[in-house]
Length: 271
Image (spheres, rainbow, N blue to C red):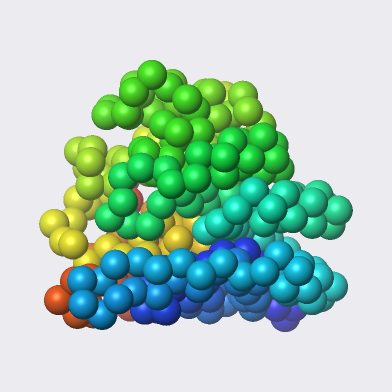
């Protein structure tokens, strides 16, 4: 059997729940060989758990990408990119290597924050990465920023409006994650032709650190295995529901999803 290979271009979460740490764990659970190009190192102050982000020099990021892309990958994703220079670098490399199974997870802030710290990064993602993306996986806040809608997205109709705008900007498939905000933890998938609402169990927990990264990584792994975007997103929804349902406490400030939960405790999704 030929091992499928995947790339993540993302930050490193020192606590292990999100970023490339989550991506590599998720890739492993999907039987793909994961490789990581690290864009930044995220640490947390032990007293208060405030985020500290240390960017990686662009030349170092480029060398990591060159190493991985020389091996060849079946699918790729990006997460926290950190600067316009890194976004431009990622877009350049993905285009040069004709990565047609690329997942854009448009990370804009760390969990717990509610405003874009670097709006120019959002502009660069919109202009350079969305047109390359087979799938993009924004949450409600990120979808609002990418689509440029008049206000926060609060319901399925708002998600549909944003999905259409994001698709028009170049992303071939859009999945907007409703998360705990919407009834039945509804996500919306849009391929330019039809809307599909994916529902799952709404889980009352705060142990959800890394859920977004894990979802995008699961989509990427499923694409590497040859699944269609719709199938990849549906399977990723099931994978993340299980991971959240079996999340666990890390410390007094945060709890992580359990990346291996689906293979032990699968959760069904209505779609």
